[in-house]
Length: 135
Image 1 (spheres, helix red, strand yellow):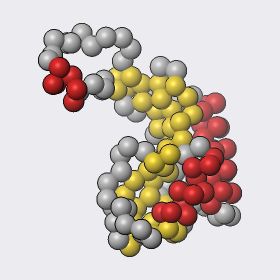
Image 2: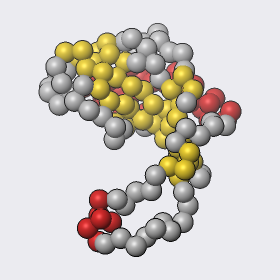
Image 3: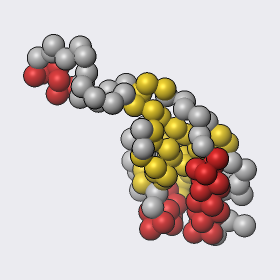
Image 4: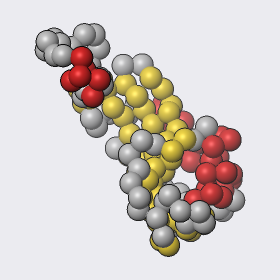
């Protein structure tokens, strides 16, 4: 994980405005959200590793599933997840178990991030600053 200095850190706005600004430039709400915090993710690459720019936010008033909720942005960071390739060697499971356990665990949940993706991540955060109009 690599933190990125940004004027977005500490910025407060509504979740609606943040989402409206970030989605058109390629961010999506990450799967790891809860009712009080979440992430906007921008996938940089998928080549044996998934590399993401992640923009964390937390609710400051209300819960994230409520209209008009206000959020505060945290420190943006780059994240890499390396996944196992191929078939699960312990694949002797039933259909019900397979339905719930269909995704492999990361081989390295905190992979090193190549310099080229670090530079791309910084550029993406600068685009996000402009989109959110934080300068």
